[in-house]
Image: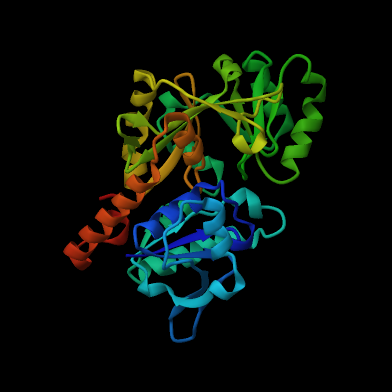
Length: 347
């Protein structure tokens, strides 16, 4: 199949990224693979879509570094027609473009929708990703699996809610990801609450969540594919992210350390609770961030950590993801136009 991976910028991709791992795996499975950046798309007056793509086909790779080095060579760039792709994975991180290229996130979703309208299987579904650009999307999941949350820009209301939570809460911006702009307020930080609220509210709404004591042990990143836990050879694609400092953020990009984790019945029950919405929204591959029996975040854009999973359990999860895309493409060819694109993404 012909598969495209949309990233923030091909030049800034790193070998450790999950997207690089998926792209190399697809290449090694003899698929035609192209990487495209958020600024590489074009729409012609005749309605045709194209992009500047980078590829490294024709050989098999064992090194992620060598693969990406070949992809990023200037001579690999070529103009590709987007309606000729079988499947395109939207794998850009909104946080990376939030400040310097705020236009990129909406543009990526917009071109994703154009590709879907042209008959390309686009995952995760761009219409749902457009909604998920805001953390308010998270509030659409069942209340039972979410921590108590307030979204506001009113300082008095935020301060009152923090007091209702016993003076301990997590504050973060409504937009963004990767642990950027996250603060924990407790008795020591309470005198600085006004300044924290002001700093976050400067760029929009403030999300206030109850602090979960289990967060001291970090959180669990669990990969979910088609609404089900990703399992290969009996191993779950899941790991605990533990902070290596007093910083409450356990994100790998914020210095978190990956550890093995035993997937509990409570975690599986949580996945089952969110499965219907993930499937209905065409969310093919997501990362659930779990603390205790609560869901802290749903990463639907570019969940990372497959490399950590492989190192921890000596299991390569990437081939299973590419194999399921092959299955989706085969079903799409079988059913033709009988199913809308969003439905095909949930098969």
